Amino acid sequence: MATSKRTIINSIAVLRILTLASCTAALALIVTNNFKLDGDKTKFSDIKGFRYVLAAAAGGVLYSLIQLPFALYHAVKEKRLIKGDFLPMFEFYGDKVIAFFLASGVGVGFGVSIELKIFIDQLVDSFELLGVDGLEEFQDKSQKFLDRGIIASGILLIGFTTMAILTIFTSANRNGRGF
Image (cartoon, rainbow, N blue to C red; front, side, top):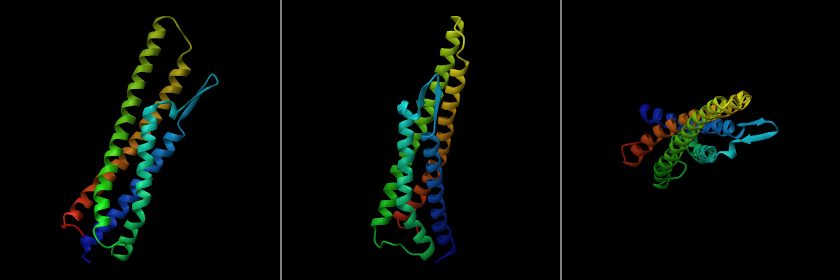
């Protein structure tokens, strides 16, 4: 096997591992995102956009777990575990679907977090103009909550980027110019 083909096959395995790691990190970060204020607990699941981020991250983890053994086998043995066109076609379409799913999860996560941060700032400013005090704790905790949503979305962006690079490799493989 040529060195460049070996490098590409190893790169695919590494990219699949990086995708799995970033999606897992985003999943863990979004699931543990919550805060308490005056006995009321706000969880990530209270915001539908964060549920979508969770679904995208979970989809990335599941797909990566399915693909990783095939990629590692290909890298170690230098041949495909399943002969024929099934695996290259599954990679071609699967990588694209998951890449778009991750991209939409990133967009939703950033959009919801940033918009809610702006809304909360404006809400607190409006209440302060009316003379209402004591909203500092609410503003601080909710801003930290939304910052974690932004961080989770940023980590998911890494997963999308690695998956997008994988789509380039699998496209070349499907067209016969690959490995």
